[in-house]
Image 1 (cartoon, rainbow, N blue to C red):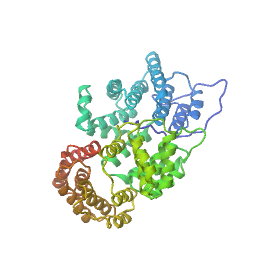
Image 2: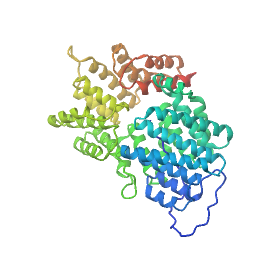
Image 3: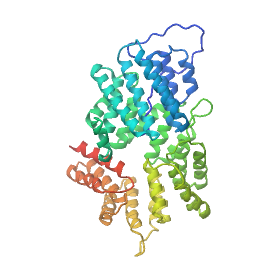
Length: 492
């Protein structure tokens, strides 16, 4: 699970270093002004500016230890560089030891200890140390739970506890048994309640809580407008903030707003002083692929693979490189990219799992259906329908293509707001699919559930959400099941 980084809005001008400094005054259980400014630089992904400010703070003070750890976990998780993993974990252990010796008291001390433990758990899971990560997650959860109980008015602790409660509570059953074994049951209702309290009331980390809540509601509760408005406002207020810009690109991409996403990408801050963020290139490659700019898409993904040190999204990048070469009739390059899918990387994220399954199945893609899929992903719905008009089935058409065609038509009509037509083709996909191990039918059921939920037809919506859960195996089962489960919980 990738970490959601904190956010803090405030003054970010770097004061010059002084040989002698007066101690900073801070409100109880709050960051000092310099710590807050350093934290703001962390969120802008400007590590050297953050380190310069931290030199002006009291070494080993609780707030400084917290910001230092946020800086180190940000650098590690963004770079995904395994060579930095051991040093990061060791530094976290040293910070935890310093906290044990600290003479400071209060909510910030307990919050910082649990937060660092959570950062360590995220790093361990991301780099394949799942057992240690699960144990540290348990420690962080219990410590944050105790902090909330002891300091119920301290909202930052409710923010992090709420995030953990929600994500643990929403995990598919295949993952939850292990967390239950560790004593981490999770709770969607409590998680949302805690997140909303931290998002709606002033505190040091209110903006972080607002971002997490907006992403949860956009992903699982179909509230894209609110999330886009928040991120657009934050990015407009801080155009030099790389995290906010990344979120703006990502949300526009998810909402099929390709032109807006590319505009944000081309305006993203960068250069000396910023943490390199190669994943931006991978997102841009997708956006250019949607537009049919195949050569430009290939350039961006090639640069992503060259610059990125992590193991995730590599298979997906080679799959997208394959598509760009194949669709531009470069068969030789397409074959080379296809072989690379199997050569490295991991299959943890669903995009990589899909790419590996494409390689393993060895079933050729249909050119028209593939173009239509990319056009729909990019928000070019009318163009997709024109592409689909040229697709016709025969007795030799593979079942996968027979299912994909009505599903793509449904998504195109849905994007155009023609919901009656979308329902017809979603239903046709389900009827044709049976128990075929492809995602078209479960996704059709999920979308029909959302459509009927929006119309207030609760019983019909429940039927379709339950049907989405019933499919035993397909490429996007984890995310589909999570969304269906949360939708059913909302209807109770």
